[in-house]
Image (tube, rainbow, N blue to C red; front, side):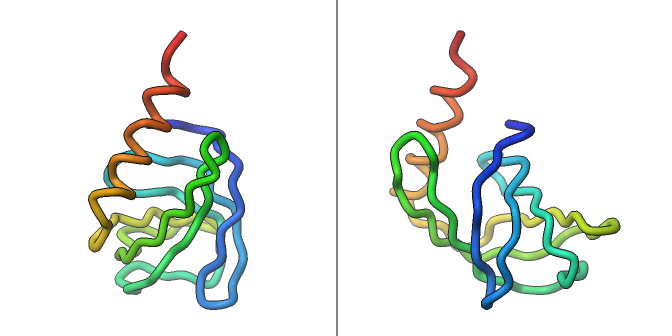
Length: 91
């Protein structure tokens, strides 16, 4: 899991900041989301510039931060996220 990743995303015309990215989902700062919301999220991976477009569910919300579990995610997006995480975690 990556912490401190700063990437802008847009969610139903509600911009926010993506702070944590993992294979299973993301942690974002977007105060208007609440647990149980089904959402669509798009973000660009900083190293490759690949746009990830996913559907997910808000599984927790605390203050201005929310955790989103990916639901629908293409295999190409999963692979791009996996490659990005591998690059960032490599010494």
